[in-house]
Length: 242
Image 1 (cartoon, rainbow, N blue to C red):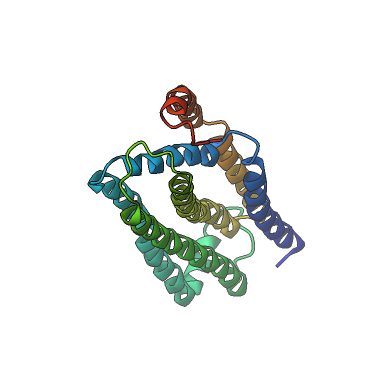
Image 2: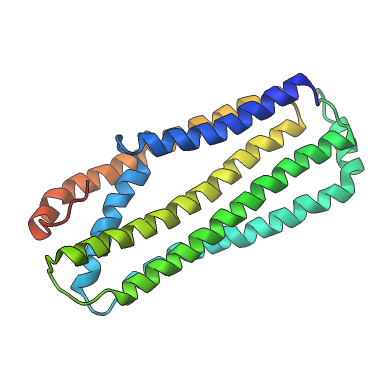
């Protein structure tokens, strides 16, 4: 590996870890997708007590879980494909040699780059499966929630907030798994040139930031919470969604 390869790898890891920490801290004080969705989840879980039959709620949780399961199974297939490439390193090297301006095609460097992809998708698989388990936990908590229409019982309200927290954690794990796919696409650029690897890593950070903090979807979700806030403050004055 050249010095440029080490710099590119350092920027890649720094971009991933740095953005994760930045988004986590900024979400505490700035409207973003995770913050606004948390408010919606609190309102959703508060509604759980108002009806005894919760088939629709369980179906919505199952629908969320189904998306995660799809990515978890897809990750295993991708992992199998990447591991297979370890037996075809010479063919990969020959393919890269046919690409103009591609950098070092040595088998050892190709194996290092493939190892990075394997690590990324292993991390993604752990995140997706953890998300699936947590959605299962939410289902259990919903099943245990009593029927108490228009309740103002503080313990039940706190229970609703904890259900929203568990659902939040499932959503975060799913988001981290998807983020692994984004950075895996950036890592593919390393096979071509480390400079492109650096550029793609920074572009992924920009895309993630824009979608989390500046997207049109965020504006719509935030407007929805603002429109409902007054109505829900009348219906559920005991619930703090901030």
